[in-house]
Image (cartoon, rainbow, N blue to C red; front, side, top):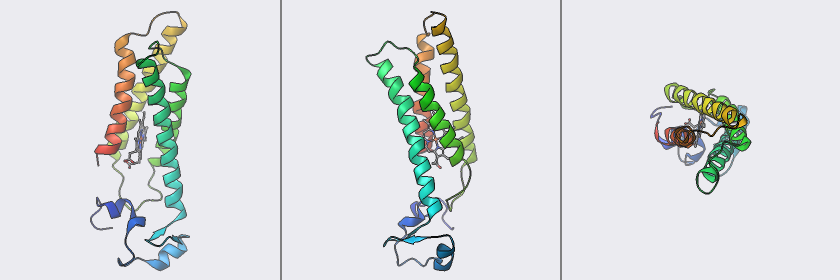
Length: 158
Ligand code: HEM
């Protein structure tokens, strides 16, 4: 689609009805007319996976924030679950399905590296806790900073 970075290129379902659309193709793809445009089942499924990805981010960052501000600054299992949910849904979103624009693979690769770094910090930190040692405060804060960085990269880098 021309103008690959426009809102309409990223969200074709927002196209006003006056913009010519390939109706035949939409019908073949199982499109549903919703007044403003046509949403295919694949697009909707991708939005559901994005929703799950955001839940994973919220679980990870929420669990970390609860520990950072008012907690005992420990690493918890909930952080692992959040990272797992965000990671699995993120990998599913890394494949180009249900979209009409090009994915930014440099950005996705950067996010994957950061996710692996967060996973390593969570693993090392919880191993230390199990041995009765404290989690170094730099390690604890880095987990939150890298999680926020990944969300910032997702939202700002296009
Ligand atoms: C801690 C780890 C992660 C966090 C906090 C995170 C956060 C987010 C957030 C907040 C969004 C929504 C932004 C928007 O809709 O513009 C998003 C979208 C997305 N994320 Fe992640 N993410 C993480 C890991 C990953 C990983 C590992 C991958 C893939 C390998 C990934 C791939 C994507 C993709 C493809 C999107 C769809 C939006 C786009 O094209 O930019 N994410 N992520």
